[in-house]
Image 1 (tube, rainbow, N blue to C red):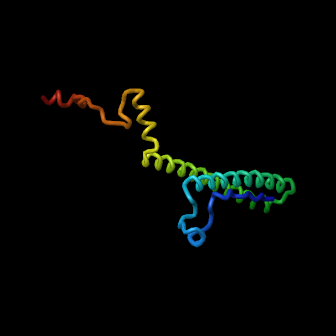
Image 2: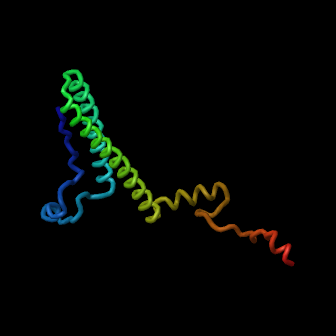
Image 3: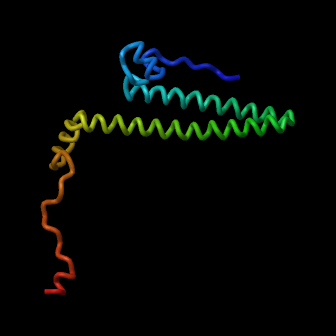
Length: 141
């Protein structure tokens, strides 16, 4: 019924205590990239499982197994929620990778070259013109 997916060797799993004993690292993943790859694999497995559960729901409906069908509906609901969490986690990891690159300056050269093309500073800077006068000041004076 459920298929087992192998995890690539460079994705390191396990509890922190297991990883500490094995290679001296105290994190469950070697990097954000490996965590993101794991989350991607998890999403694929969840999608495959959702498809299989839908087939099981259809089969239970044909067999008039109402109790089994209700249990499968609950499994489907829980897997759907898990899929949403996995998707959100993938987006968060991507945001963290982007922020890390930005903070480490890996993107600063690209921003600088893009800004040079349009004649601006590499990062957003406040306008140099003075703020406009408000109508209240004109009326008060």
